Image (cartoon, rainbow over the protein chains, first blue to last red):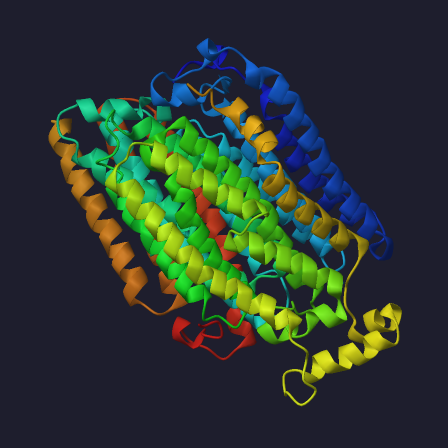
Length: 525
Length: 102
């Protein structure tokens, strides 16, 4: 690309990523040097502190180099339209506000995941924390990828960490099974993607994303089309877009709630960033014809996700299928690849971050004795046992279903408006129609859980006995209930719930302020 | 001369990739499945190196190093998870790993 003297080794530009790596190492070292019985708080302090410092760096970069003049951007054409920032490390990493907003999303997600796991009493915390931080690092790299090198490395850093994090709970067979399935399918998707990179490299002769579009102008474009298809296959797999979603329900159910909450949001956000960059860089001037398969997959995702969610009795599986449907909605933001559409997609990801993490936090909060409160029966009569938790869950479910005043409604509204304004014609109407229909179906899925929470628990019901005992314990006061059920509820989990609930409401009631933020990312015409 | 050769290499790498993908779908032993993923990655490596020779730049060669390194990490993790999974239960192939359904 260029010789070493001219490569811009701007370590300040990747300060948030370096901070995450240092924090992960620090956690591991602290575990070695501190006495085992007193190390836990320090490990968490190091992890949470590292994420907070990374957030601070992200904020600094947002107003600093990322706001720089567009002229300094390496890579003309479609990718340049996205960027107001700078390209560093010889163009392999792009530091712009598009990257940074994904950094912020991922960092908030990993912060919530760290806090959610704080009440869990299991050993070997340091490895677990380092894995979460490492996965966040990979997502950050993926969001800022400017070439196949960084795309591949980011994807693998996040995947390898998550494979282990999913299988981490020792002695839990479902976790190991989920880890195994995720590993085999994920590795196959990665291999497919790498093969796609090889073909694209053969066509264009460069690894830089900015050089991709040139591949359309040289003779045969077979390599270009096949390569692009294989790369998109890998990304769709990571996004869990139907029909590449089959791993998601198993993995979401098997992994512990904090890991699931983090990976569902973080992986989707980072893969979405990579998808936008690749599509903007690779598609020829007239993109609508090439994107038809994407719309078919989006509609399929919405249908499969919402109908499958409606028949689930496991709340984690339900949320997994809901995630599949939400990715379908998210794909609407790519109609016409307009700035307005991508802005709506960013807003939707923000809304999904808060409502999804909130829902998983409730699942984690209901957990007892090393198990998450994930069965529908765990939610029976929740309102009469823990009204606060039940009301929070209701808010998140309403938001996921897309009802005002929660964030999910505004998110869908912007997606529909952007789709109709994109000038994509019939495709836009098909997608909007599918969104409306599947929203109705998935509302049934979510409200089934909500109704379960407000139903009085029947002592006779076989599955309700535990709930009944807990209800009886609750009558003796909150302390005895907490002790009796062994519920790992804590201030950390409460903080996550509060942040998620506030975020969901704030984005729902004052969407303009957040939308103004995303408008910094993409200079609107 | 090289122009003709790159097509031969590409054909070979395509065949390797298909062998890997087919093996992944048809075989039921977790170890063999992991090997099939490796074949797919090496098919990509072959294509990278062939294209790099053909195009006369180094980027393809460098990417191959990355892929080899990452593949090693992937296999290490894969073997660890497989050992963990199959020590706990008396299962010989992946069809016995079916706790998660629905």
